Amino acid sequence: MLDFLGSLQRTHTCGQLRAEQDGQPVVLMGWVNRRRDHGNLIFLDVRDRTGITQVVLDKEVSNEAHAKAEAARSEYVVAVKGKVRRRGAGLDNPNMPTGQIEVVASELLLLNEAKTPPFSPAEDAVANEEVRLKYRYLDLRRPQMQSNFALRSRVAMAIRNYLVEEGFLEIETPFMTRSTPEGARDYLVPSRVHAGSFYALPQSPQIFKQILMISGFDRYFQIARCFRDEDLRADRQPEFTQIDLEMTFPQQELVFRVVEGFLTAAFATAGIQLTSPFIQMTYDEAVRRYGIDKPDMRLPALTDLTGELTPELREQLKIEQRLPVIGFVIPKAGGLSGTQRRALTEEIRTGFGDCGLDSLDVARLKTNAAFATLANAIESRLAAEPTLEGGVTPEDLIIVVTPKLGTPEKWNYDPQWIWKRVGALRLELAKKFADKHKLFDQTGTANDFKFLWVTDFPMYEWNEESKTWDAAHHPFTSPHEDDIKAGRLTSDKGAVRALAYDIVLNGTELGSGSIRIHRKDVQAEIFRSLGMSDAEAKERFGFFLDALEYGTPPHGGIALGLDRIVMILAGASSLREVIAFPKTAKAIDLMVDAPTPVSDAQMRELHLKIASRS
Image 1 (tube, rainbow, N blue to C red):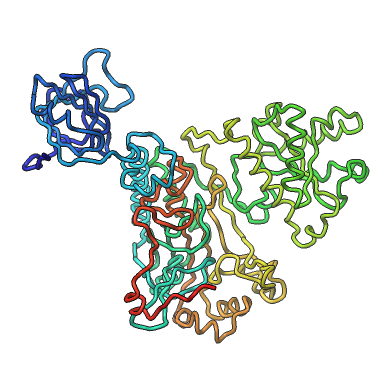
Image 2 (image 1 turned 180 degrees about the horizontal axis):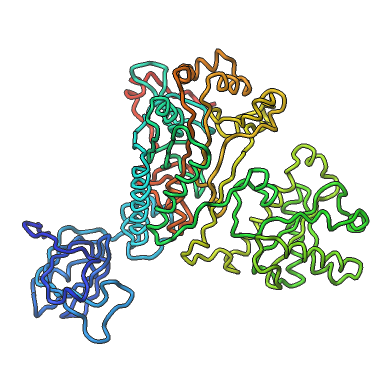
């Protein structure tokens, strides 16, 4: 028979007791993490979110408590009354903060039973993620998960406190709004009252935070829930949390300083001291140096080796004459055998061959008298790369990528194409060798976290499918004033730069922001440049265009993914490790079995019916 708690009050948590409490009477409550039966002595490890305390049930101290301990099993909920006792000599457990003491129980209450769980929360890892998600309430009991969410809470509080100190007001914006272009599909909510009409769940509070600036609130922030109906992956969920902020009269640098400030406060909660200001780099520079607009700066940059190859050498090596030759180094990944090098060369040729890439084996060039000078020049050029600390060593892997003959068509279409493809290869090879050579080992220092601001993004991107120019960021981003004055909004959209910026950490985009358009004439021109008629713009954004006519101040802001920040700080590989109740890759909640069909009555109330599928 189970016990009632009665008037018994918990005095300490399970991770709180130390040797200083020796002899003190205590009451603990929690779950049975493990049970060990030694006859007249039964040991229960009792767990709550703060830690574990070893409880001793001695038959000679309390026969009744010992009898109840015989019935206890893993995940039973218990209350323990007893005294703290310093463990005997040589019996300390250095792996537990409470490892110097134990509690000798005089009373044990069995508050609730537990079925045998599909996995034990005492396990460090559970292989089957679907089982973890189905029994999420058990998974969340695991110490690692408890630690992740304690970290998340500290990070969110540090950010909130910092922004409040900086004069920001926390203001909530609606969950049910209208559909606006944000780059992904909306989740729609049908209206029962207004037949045939729908609300949309916000992909971000973008328009509302701009309206708040028009309303004179000067500095706004929100740790906001957002929703996007898009294909999922490890760092993407259909509902996510972002740190959203906006301010009036800012320059980019002011936004950067605020973000660097709250990130410094957030990382300090994990014991990591950041150094600011962070490095800044334009979009064009990032693509040229790293082949991507979210560079992982823990790896050395790309090096342009075009000048090392004369036309004669290109002819001999059968390298396209007009296109660049690019090299990079993967630290600690050298020392490959000849067979491994040939396999890697073939892997580059076949894996990236659809993009016209090939490679040179510098080690083999060195053994050929005709090309030894070239090989040494390449090594010297790579060793001079500022991001390659210590130069090139025999432990490093040198990759020299050459475009194949017959690839100029792609080059003509996108001049940055080769840099992007080589950047993708650089990351692919880094991942290939990361585990074996410990490229990304975490030491818990600021050097593990390479922050970067990427600025001056393209205002537009070409949509090959629709043959139109789309907004690369969102249509409320301000173009550079020089590009407006030069008439490039209509004459050369591909050259227009946006006052847009991303904050990047170790190759992960943490957030995006921009200085916004605050003039109605410019906003209307941007809508027209995106192929939107004045009538369509008025229908979709009339309320916003009207608001711009009532003294809108210059304003700008940014939104960062809280989930991603915590994921990186926790050393987790997936957002699902830091979101309490996440969805699978198919956007299913296995615990509550959602989404589900609804009744015909509910469908009729919403004026909906399911169309038959052919």
